[in-house]
Length: 210
Image 1 (tube, rainbow, N blue to C red):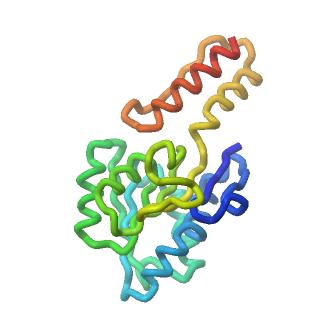
Image 2 (cartoon, rainbow, N blue to C red):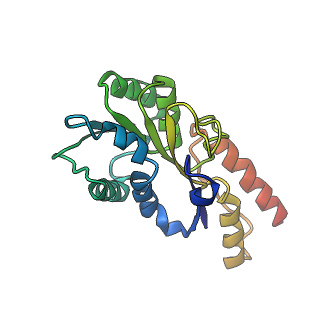
Image 3 (cartoon, helix red, strand yellow):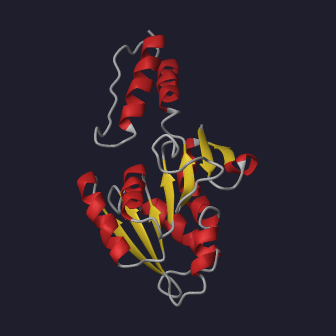
């Protein structure tokens, strides 16, 4: 199971247990909870512009974008009617993220959504004034995005489904399903800042399982 944490909502409200298929609902929850503050601020603007920076490609995020638009609509924001969204994708080339983030800042968008930890880190370095809302798979405190879960501080907030912490559990589940398997592969992107947390955690779990 994922442990989802919505920052700035308090410990009791911000921790929700969900099954792994809830990723789409997670993005929807992001639009409906963590973005309430930033969007309340831009609601008075004439056709506010949302920037969305993703580390992967648009096809990778397609189901999440559908959920994102749906929840925005439920909050009264309809793309093409009273809000504009600028989508920017790095296509898994993390070296593109800093200039893409800087470009969104130059366009003076009203708020920026960071669809992954690398994107959020690039945006944090690019601006201290534009509100940034992230949807990430790691610990935002450990990666340096925010000061704490209850009080993020700065111009960043968002939600984190704690994917890194559940990586060893996935290996344990695989071991239960296929106990005779002695060799397992771990596919990671070495340039992803979460890799240095995932790899040793899974290695330690493998060692404990023999």
